[in-house]
Structures are given as C-alpha cells and as structure tokens.
Image (cartoon, rainbow, N blue to C red; front, top):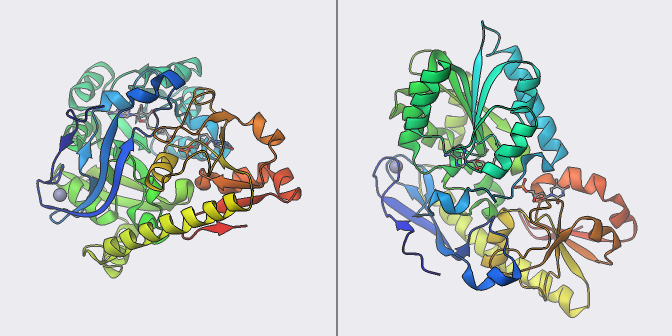
Length: 413
Ligand code: SAH
Ligand code: TMP
Ligand code: ZN
C-alpha cells in the first residue's frame, strides 16, 4: 500500500530544529491493526525512524502516520485488560480526588480516556468530568461505565468548546496519550485555554531514560510519536507559557514519568524536577552518545533474539507469544519473526482474537487456548505486565515451561 499520505520531515515537529536520526527500524505496519485473512494484502506500511532534536532535545519519529488511521471505531486496545493498570488508575483517581479536586464543584478532563479505566472512579465519586477520546468503540465502553465522553480528538478547537460549555478545568490528565500526539502546539494551546489559573496538566508516558537504559526499542511504534524526558518537556512547556513543576518516576509499562505542568509561575517547582534534569545531564542525554549506544544495543538484541528462537526451532521446542501488544509489532517486524519461530500469540482482548498480527501475520488466539497448549517456551511480548502474568501462569512454570524475555538482554528463565 502507498505511503504517500505519510509526512516525512527532517525537522523537529515542535521547534523546527534539526533532527539527528539514530535508529531506523525499517518498514512497519500499524501496530494495532490486527488483520483478517482477507485483509492481508491491504496493509498499510510506513518507515519507523527515530531521531533526536538538536534544538529542544525531544526524541521523536520522523514519519507521522495520519491520526485517523490509528484511532477510530475499531481501535482495539483496552486499558482495563491489566489488573495492575486498573489498580494504578484507581490510585491516580483517588489521589486526584484528595488533592487537586477538593475545591467547590471541581472539574477534570482526561485526554485519551479509553474505556474509562481512570474516570470511572471519578464518576463514581460524583465529580464533574469529561473524557475525550476519538476511538468511539473504547469511548462507548467508558460511557457504559458511567463516564461522560466526547468521542473526538483533543486539540485547541475542542478545548475552547469545552471551556465554553463546562468552564475551566482544575486538572487535565493524560496517560499514554500525549506522547501519541504529534500536534503538540494545538494540544498545549488547548491546555492553556482550558486550564484554570491554578490548574495542572498531568501526563504520564514512557520515559526516554528507561528506554535507553533497558534497550526497550519495542516502545517505538506508530502511536508513540514522542519519547519524553525532563529536559525536553521543560523546553516544550516553556514554548507555551507553561512550566514543568513536578516529575515522578513510575514503574508501570516498563518505566514511565508522570509530568505535572502549570502556568508559568503559578506553582513552586519541586526538587524532583531539578534532580531528574541533573540525572539526564549526568547521563549525557543532551549528546548523541546514549542514543548511539542504544542503537547498537537494539541491533545486538535482534541478533540475540533470532538466535535463541532459531536454536529452539532446531530442537523441536514449541514457542508461543504472550500478549499481542502494540509493542510486539516492532519486535516481530524488525526481527522478522514468522510462524515457524512463534506459532501463535495468546491475548485476552476479544477484538484481537481470531485475527493476525500486523505485518508478520502470527495468529492471535484467546488466552483460554494457552492453558491447553503444550508450549515449551513463551515469548513474553507483554513484558511490562510480567509480574501480573507470571503470578497468573504458575501452572505453566510448574510443568516445566520457560519464559523468554528480551530486555535488557534475551533471557530464558
Ligand atoms: N489512558 C489510557 C489509554 C491509552 S491508549 C491508558 O493509559 O491506558 C491511547 C488513547 O489515546 C487511545 O484510546 C486513543 O484513541 C487516544 N487518543 C489518540 N489521540 C488522541 C487525541 N488527540 N485526543 C484524545 N485522545 C486521543
Ligand atoms: P500493553 O502492553 O500495551 O498494555 O498491552 C497488553 C496486551 O496484552 C493487551 O492486548 C492485553 C494483553 N494481556 C493479556 O493477554 N494477558 C494479560 O494478563 C495482560 C496483563 C495483558
Ligand atoms: Zn525540537
């Protein structure tokens, strides 16, 4: 399929500065486009190339996939698919209710509310809220959970309409969503428009520092356009009259940071911001060094992973995949993993089951099948949920089954 509609740009999407490309992951399909057998000849591909801006330090993709191709009625990702993540977002909501949302008739807006995993707790508490998410299938699930939804892309024009209809927001929250949005200018203009004078914009996304450290290159895929760090977010906020006032490292999804932005001068800047900025400086994240080392690590991981899988194939082992994650599209397509290496991928999401993984067309089957499968080895694509999954799959280990994980190195355990 043609990629004519993909925009290629060698300048920074945020500041117009020059980009320094450090990794080319090749032709990739859309990570969440699970295909039917009839659809295999009609897949959409783009070039997955990652760069660092020499001006504002933001790590970003070079190619931008049109947003409607990724986020639409059939978008299959359901945030509530992990019990750990359900607990995480319940905590986020409770903390928000106890801190930022204690005033008179508070109002919170979530960008990328998905199936209502966070806002359902806010709705249950009877607090005014609005979830904005263009993927109408997931948005419908949120509505069924009692969450008020606007099924659209958040951007400046939507923010103005929300402000007019509902008044200013005390909190704007976004998890695993802001990094999906190339058009930062419009979103941050919208945030300024919508936020109350003392309100905060809180977002949590995969942390570039963790990605570099682990070599977790599967965080790089169509939907993850930016890879934030304290240094780049500081600069991005400044361009829009906002200020990074707090950061918090999070263990979820393989390592994230929760950033808090406020209007410039509205809040005191926490010590944690200074500390993380200093750490990034110490790690020389403003130079090409860690990115070049990362690219080398990624190429080594590809060689290691292929070797392990090829050796297992030669011994007649049966390897299956666990979790048809969006991330696994990058692993499968960059490492050329085909059904002779991984026979099937098990996943709990009904929308993915009975379909084929993007690009490499591994069949996705319901998790119930895993319990009857005589797999000797499981490639843990959903490695970010390892603790939860291994606790649920003790029986597999008890019968001698082995897990294959791949960050920071390929391991069989
Ligand atoms: N917050 C959830 C969902 C993350 S998936 C979680 O952390 O698990 C990313 C979500 O962002 C998807 O549901 C997608 O539809 C939504 N999204 C993408 N672009 C958006 C935009 N411009 N405005 C609002 N939501 C957006
Ligand atoms: P994520 O890593 O983007 O959150 O995606 C996780 C995928 O793995 C999602 O498709 C659901 C699936 N999954 C399982 O199949 N079993 C599990 O126990 C968990 C936690 C996730
Ligand atoms: Zn830049």
